[in-house]
Length: 252
Ligand code: 13P
Image 1 (cartoon, helix red, strand yellow):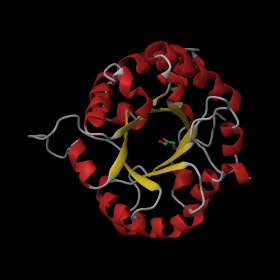
Image 2: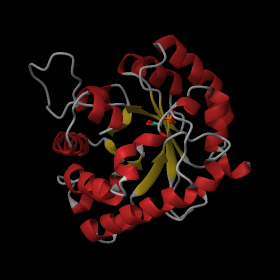
Image 3: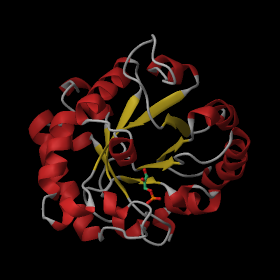
Image 4: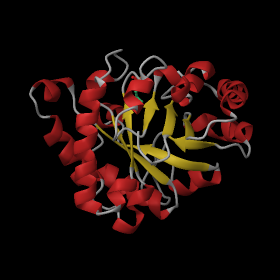
């Protein structure tokens, strides 16, 4: 682990109604009251308001799972950055592999989303990661390097430290297969080098999350790696006690 403040984010994907999100928050907050890390919850859009009210002024903050880069207009079904600010969001996830694979999002679009978030004073969690096929073909660093080139193309150097990058190997998402800590660290180190080449000193401040089957049982060994500063958690973030155990990784 590094000097960077760890950041754990719960990506609930298309799970939890507003009422279920509120119940989660009520059970979760007491479990993390003394945590000294950054904690982020990303419920579906429809639960942001209720979850945000339940969070109140706690240190746990809200994120959206997606955003549209435009300010407003005829974009049926889409949500603009200012609408997320209005609901108390602090972060938004962009470029998740499910959005890239299932909804055809390009890195160019992800770049526009990241820029729009920064312009609205929201912090982007930019996801990158290779598929199983790319992994097995030994193309991980090429694929991730290209995604970084394109997805962070519009981030100005002065704002770089506000960005969080999440490395999520697609083959490890929801499969129970985690990249070994050594594999994850290897990719994170390359991402760190890329960030330092691109953003200079600010590259050292950017927090890198690992995502893909993170759970209470494997989080400590991942967090022990130099360039892993936190986790983006799907399945294991749906239950308050499991996500709280991840947040308290250092007490295992
Ligand atoms: P799982 O933790 O369920 O593998 O999901 C990871 C993920 O996609 C988080 O964004």
